Image 1 (cartoon, rainbow, N blue to C red):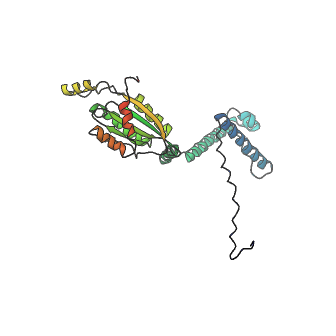
Image 2: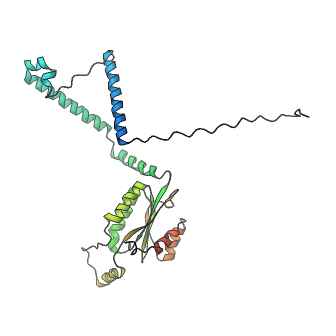
Image 3: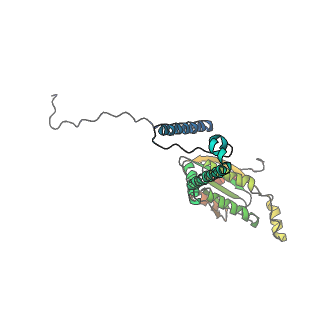
Length: 272
């Protein structure tokens, strides 16, 4: 009764304990980073001095300057001070040249700087993406052509996703990206762009002036700010909507039709 008949069951390995989570990265303050650098330099210098004491490496030449020339090269400086001064100046120029060459070798090229900046912007949205929703009074008239250009080029440079839906009555900006990139974009649309300013260099006819007066003062307001797991839009671009239904369709395809409801329910006069 207690004996196995046939093939015995395969023994199962005991359940392993869950692996320990990886250690969290240590973030140091500016003061702590300076202290760590200072300690590292001291250890490196101590190691170099020990190697010199053991005769493994040659001792460095004395760092002679005009101010300490007489003290470092006492006998030689007294014998021929002019010649020694010329030699000291030659050594100073050589040290400066070597220093500049080392800096030039470490300096990043324009392409490396650009790649580093792109990497930092992309790393911001690895965990979650921040969303800004703006309501703009007018993005269709020719007075806002420069504003549209600034928004478009800055969004691309900051690696932002989103769309700008332009209609006859009002416009919407949906911008997705990292917090630092969006902070720069927010400063652009809320401070740098002068929405109420008109282009005085261009001549207007009476009909255009009447249309502008009916639209009132232009504005840009931050309606909503939130977080999403990943961006809903691709690279930022403007889209023209012929009607409110058309604008809703653009947002519905991305699953964010509620953004238009937020725009319509926002009373910008009450928020001033």
